[in-house]
Image (cartoon, rainbow, N blue to C red; front, side, top):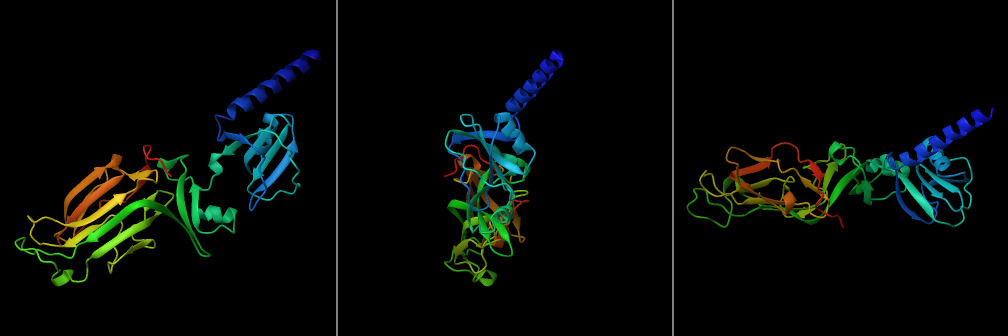
Length: 307
C-alpha cells in the first residue's frame, strides 16, 4: 500500500513538472510580471485560490481561457475568458503575478475585435494575421469599424505617392508643359495614408482609395505608375510611384516585378533602398502605365522597428 502511494506521488509530481516546463514550449508564453488584471469591457475574469502554477495552468487549458495570471506568494490564479463566466469575480489582493498569454487566441481580424468588444471603434489595433508568412507575428492595423463591415488597413508613416505629370513629348523631340489627345485631364497626384490588406494573405487591395488625397480625377491604384508623355519607345518615361513601408514592420518581396500595360507602357526604372522597404518606380508611355506583376503581398521586415 505504501509503495502504491509513493508511486502515485511520483507520478503526479512528474506530471506537474512536465506541465510547468511545457508552459514555455506551448502556446502559453510567460510575458511579464506585475499587478493583477482589472476587469473591463469585454474581459471576463475568474479568480481562485489554487495549489500552484500547474493547477492554475490546467484551469486555463481546459476552458475558453486565453490568458492567466498566477501569484506564487498568494497562490492566487486569475483566468481571463473570451466568454462570460457564471462565477463571481473575487478580490485577488496584491502580490506579484506572472502573466501567461495564449498567442493563438490573439485576434486575427478586425471582425474578431468587434465580436469580442461590440463597442470597439475605428482605430489602431494589434492583430496576428493568419497569412502563413506572419505566423505568430503581431502587426499594427487600423480597423475601420462600422455596422456592416470591419476592414483592415496599414497606416503608412511615410509618403506613398503616385505622380502623373502634366507634360508631353509625343515624338521625343520637343517637351510641352501640357497633355495632348487622350492624356488631357488624366494628370495629377495620389497620396496614400493607409492601404487596405487582407489578413488571410496580407495582400494589398490596390483599388481601395478610402485613405488617399490628391488632385488626380481617377486616383492611382496603389503601386501603379503612369504618364502620357511620349509614344516613342526610345523616349524616357516620367510617371512615378514611390512605395515606402518604413515604420510598419513590413515590406514587399524583392521578387515583386512590374510590367507595362496599354501597348506603350514601359518600365523605365525600379529602385529599391532601405532593405527593400522603399521602392521608386518610373514608368509610362503614350497614356501607358505599369502595374505589379501579380499580387502585392506584405512580409515581415525584421530590420524595421514599428513606432
